[in-house]
Amino acid sequence: MSADHYTYRVTWSPEDGEHVGLCAELPSLSWLGKTPEAALKGIRQVVAEAVADMRAAHEEVPVPIAEKHYSGEFRVRIPPELHRALAMQAAEQGVSLNRLASAKLAA
Image (cartoon, rainbow, N blue to C red; front, side):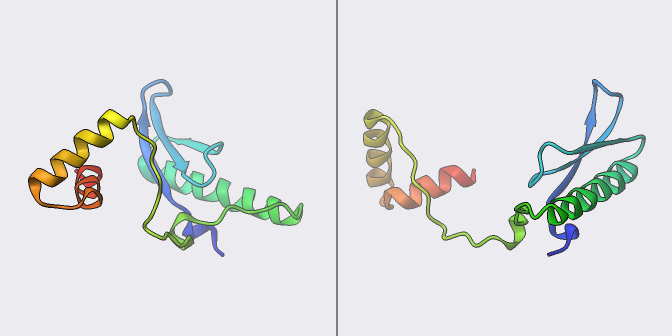
């Protein structure tokens, strides 16, 4: 697995007055840069070094989000009143509760 497979994001940091590069799989790491390109280059280098250190120490290295398998299923606990209201909405729309929930999550 390559450090290039991780999920990177660059955003503006008002507190720092610079762009900050982040990695979703390693949220404790960041890199500040004057430009978005510098922030991305910096965080990619920090992640590559961190992954190399983890491997050298025989630590578990996070799997990139892009390489994980997702079943398409997850459970969510909601109050019974909300469950009832959603079931009624689904029935009124002529769709399954699953289809209604999927549409609401995607919106």
